[in-house]
Image (cartoon, rainbow, N blue to C red; front, top):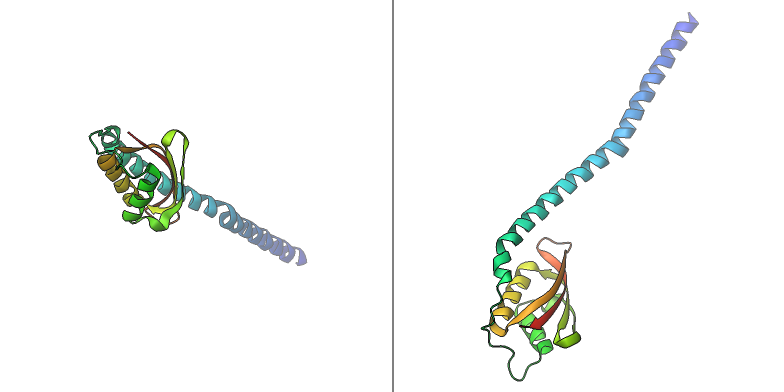
Length: 155
């Protein structure tokens, strides 16, 4: 009679151990992997929509309108970049502006509004024939904000 009780206890412990193992695997392996996969899917969807939007505006970016005025007589490209960035409402985002090689200007922006940046690039291209030669942007912590390193030059 003692043996069936011991066997029953062993079976209960075995079933309980399996249940605990399944719960631990779910809690520490499956659920985190599933959450990461869902996050990556959402990030992929956002990046695909951004890529589609960039493809749609690509023709606008490819056209270089050289009918702009050029730089004002008394302003360097460095000064023009600083003044127009501040006028466009991006003074807080300016991290550094420095002269580059061959007349370019290098600009670093942190937590800049992407929409304001795009508008500023269009404005300086149209008004002064100044264009972005290189532009590296990465998404900042907040939605719609970017960290940017760019080089601008006169057209």
